[in-house]
Amino acid sequence: MRLLLMSDTHLPRRAKALPEELLAGLPHADVVIHAGDWVDTATLDLLEARSRRLIGVHGNNDGPELRARLPEVARAELGGVRLGVVHETGPAQGRERRCAERFPDLDVLVFGHSHIPWDSTAADGRLRLLNPGSPTDRRRQPYCTFMTAAIEDGRLTAVELHRLPPRR
Image 1 (cartoon, rainbow, N blue to C red):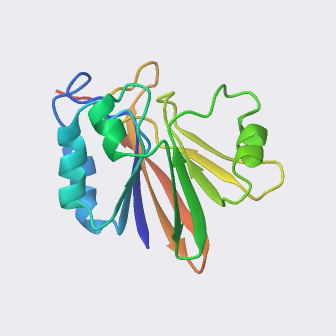
Image 2: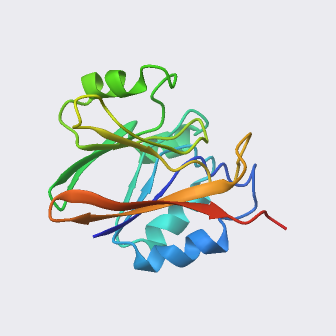
Image 3: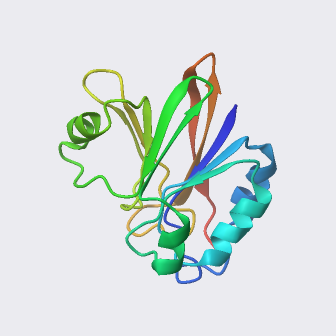
């Protein structure tokens, strides 16, 4: 099972459209995950139309229309992996411990908000935390980013951070 992960698209404020490199990956993904801060419903509509399966949550910059269509926390069992999606997880310091306590039933937690790519595992070795960064707003990061991953034999594998070329 192939996954495509993104967050913090902030369209059309930070970019006019999703990057072509990310859009090109949609047909290859079995599941597309968006960890909030869509800002516009057009992006949700686009991903719903082009994705085999979409799992998304709303973020702090998402208005009432998006909040009506998306949960604050999403959970799914994907190929034996218990996955959760949330926008905010709080400060980086202590994140793994806080998230392991808040989500004891998950194997993987995808989150956003900071625009900073993140890949770590809680001290107990059970919960993996992933932040794909932002494909449209790099903030203080050197690149805009998104992630891909796979689920094989009940395990998350092949997690890859994709750096996008600068926008023209």
